[in-house]
Image (cartoon, rainbow, N blue to C red; front, side):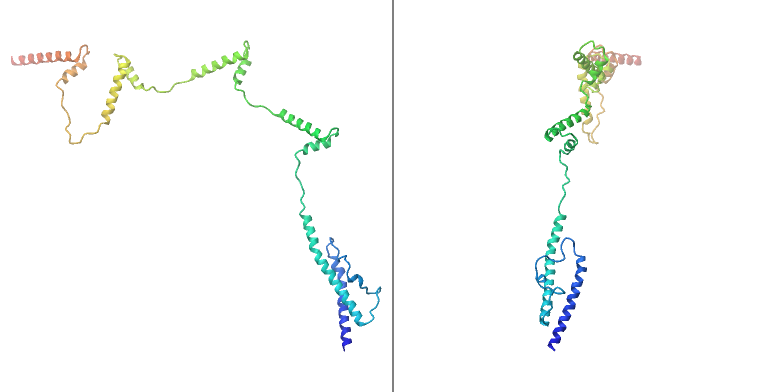
Length: 285
């Protein structure tokens, strides 16, 4: 019948509601501590009172209606909790994104020294003096290892009898040092007329070097030109002629050259003719 069907639906819903309500404590045990298991806002769950403190339904229809209200109020509460969850998650994410400033201020050392002091002066005045003292301390530890340009003169002066002022001593020391270096300097350059000079030293030096050098350079130029002259064709005739005065020239070169070649040649030819005539007359006799 219809009444039987209604009671069957009500009993089924009651059992389902009881199962849901029994499961709520277990579910709430796993809920994050950052939010309540249920929203605190007012709902129909706070209006509908069931159980020992409530009144019994007057009819099956009223009992069914009350059960429906309890279920819908529970569904609304769960929906609110789900809707509020992104807000809670966003709050957690925002908290995780907070950064921590670990930078060290430039005056941290002065601040620490001030905290350890008696604080008898203001921090600004203390910091100014602290920085001045720190700079002075660093400068005191600085060691100048540069060598002055007159270090050698200074050492020599300290080792001397200091009979003169340092300024005068340094001038003389530098002059002596320059002279010493110049004395050790060896000129290895070769003068342009070195070959002529060597040839002159090997000659009999019968003429002045200036004249010798002129003739030496002329001969050297002629020798270079002769060596660079183009070669004659193979079919060209070789000049093997002997100049007519070759014998006179050879005799003159072997003589003391006390007279000119022309005078020597004339006398040489006369003596040669006389010698040949005498040999011919002796042979004819």
